[in-house]
Length: 138
Image (cartoon, rainbow, N blue to C red; front, side, top):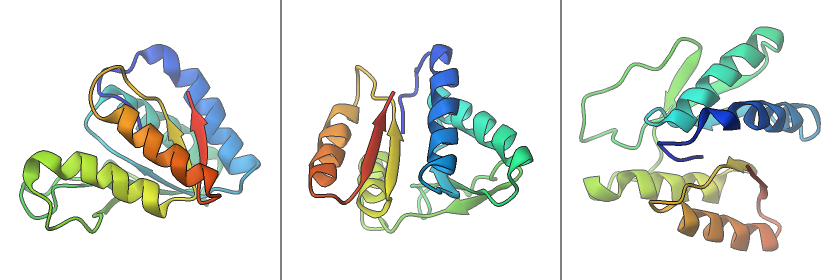
């Protein structure tokens, strides 16, 4: 997870973090959004790494399943719809992020200075203290 306006300078640390998750943690499924610069970097890095490791499974998280026209997943990615149908449209991304933090084992996050990312990080950190998730902050 990361901000819409995340700097391209994060790309190399992001790639290193993803590689670490694959090698050290055995991660093979990655869920990423598609709206911001951080998401675009993730998509690019994951495509690159998938060329070397075909066992990686890639998902695009679509929080607007019932309210917006269906998007097309980038090549090599499958659409994933978090179970948030009851959430009003303005809260879909925030609810989707919380859903992903609740159900993932590992989280790579680059919080932004604006938006809801601070609350998501705090929520993830509480879950990490309980041993429910492993967080990598960029």
